[in-house]
Amino acid sequence: MKKAILGFSLLLFAIQFSYAQNESAKQEIIELSKTKWLWMENKEADKLAELFDDKSVFVHMGGSWGKEREVNIIRSGGIWYKKADIHEVSVEIIDNTAILLNRITLLAEVGGNEVTNPFEVTEVYIKKADGWKLGSLSFTKLMGPGDR
Image (cartoon, rainbow, N blue to C red; front, side):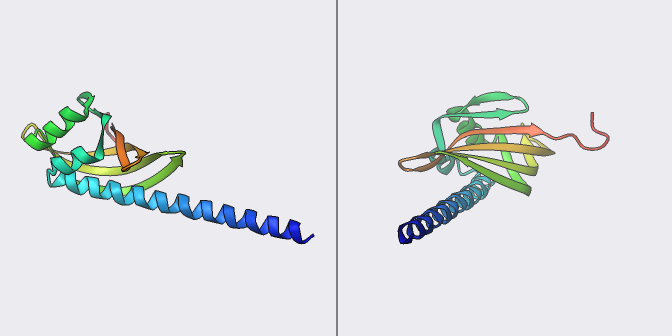
C-alpha cells in the first residue's frame, strides 16, 4: 500500500513539474516574441539575424522569402515595423517546437508608405542547443466589417 501511495505521489509530482515547465516555456516564447517586435520596430537587424534560424521563412502579403532577404529588408528600411499593438497571444508547445499566434494591429512603413493592417501572425520557434530560434513568421491579413 505504501508503495502505491508513493508511486501515485511521484506521478502527481511529475505531472505538476511537467506542467510548470510547459507554462514556463510558453511565457519564455511570449517574452521572446515581444522582444522580437521591439527589435523589428528599432530595425535591430543584427539581433534579428541571431534570432532567425538559417532556414527560416517569412510570409507577407507581397510574397515569401528566407532569412537573408528578411534581414536585408529590415536593415534597409524596405519594411519598417513601426509598432505592433498586440491584442491577443497564445502559445502551444509540441516537443521542441513552439507555435505562437498574435492578433495584432501593425503600423508599418512599406516602400515609403505608412500603412496600418490587422493581422493574425503565426510565429514558429524551434528549441535548439543555443536556445529558441524563429523558424517561420507568417502574416495573415484579417478582414473587418465592411472590408472586401
